[in-house]
Amino acid sequence: MPDVTIVGAGWAGLACAVSLTEQGARVALVDAAPTVGGRGRTVRIELAGQPLKLDNGQHLLVGAYHRTLEFVDKLGSEALPGLDRHRMCLAMPEKGFLLGRAALPGRLGHLVGLLRARGLTWRDRIAMARLIEGLRMRRWRHTAVTVADLFRAFGQSRPICDLLWIPLCVGALNTAPEHACARAFIAVLRDSLGGAGGDSDFLWPAGTLGELLPEPALRWLARREVVPRLGCLAQGILPDADGWRLSIREASPVSSAAIVVATPPSNAARLLRELAPGVANGLDRFEMAPIATVYLAWPQACELPRIAMLVDEPGRGRPGQWLFDRGVHAGLRVGAVVISDGGRFPQVSPDRLAELVAAQVRSLGLPPSLDARAIVERRATFRCVPGRPRLDASSVQRELGSGARIFLAGDYLDPEYPATLESAIRAGLAAAQRVRESLGG
Image (cartoon, rainbow, N blue to C red):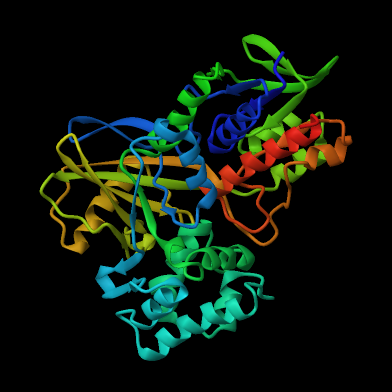
């Protein structure tokens, strides 16, 4: 009998499994999907007639993701092909906007970068710096409820918001500023533009995100005789003589002393509905939102900006928000355009979405793409609003009693951070720590 059963082999579940296995626990890992990685996994698609391995969705890793970087290091030689680091540079070429961290140490590099930003007046540049330094003086706390309230409190002009703050807010929180949580946005600013010099650096996997962490974690676990049961749908959690029994559709159940539920909120609510209805009701209150990634292919010689912000106008058929250069794959230059929700997600088919984005990126002076393919995750993440539920790993224990030994793990548990791969890793490690404490170390 395993000590712990982990339901969900996404980034949170894998971090929890590796941490517990490293400490000597016997772990069982179950996931309904046929592959590991959750929303940061490898998929195979055909683009311009070539079969390619890409990510199911584009994610931006930054230097402030310390737990993620530590976890990649823990996997050692399994974690190949690794990461490339580049100094932060944000640009909206259509508007002539450019903001980059200056090659200076610590916070001075960010401050000088703000004051050197192109495409804004001096008054606007000073206003940007005033927002960052004002929040720093307040120890990254403010009474503003929404991000829009925060902008008004610091006198941010419409050009600053359109060129920088709104794209950052929608990209990081997947929520429009008038509805987005100011506390979460402040945390993002603290760890990027307000952090140490390297915290705002962009980190690029040489391969896919799946090849960076989930697949190496799977190999790390396999070497220690932990083989996940994939394609197995967990149906419910029932009391057992020695702890808990996880029932699985069309497969034998798994009994263990403790269970970690490392699934999205809706799936966690389904598993806990009968056992802990209060926690399940809280999980139901998360507002889920879509994210789309449109992959485009050009001839290998085509040059793309490493990262560029697009002028998104969904009402005019321009839904794309960010363009990333994903490098050369099978002789093709591949770009990824991200469309976060922000309350304005275009209600069109994936094929039509790909057509719109392919036409939109031509505004950057790029040649027509050879092909475009959209991957739409309809329930990719939660909207980061001020009133979202505040749960943590031990929420089930508080409802059932300290001896329950059922824990949550997911990117939705951080009280101040939006849904990121970093918050998923943090949640998995926090759940592992709670399990160790409940089992006496």
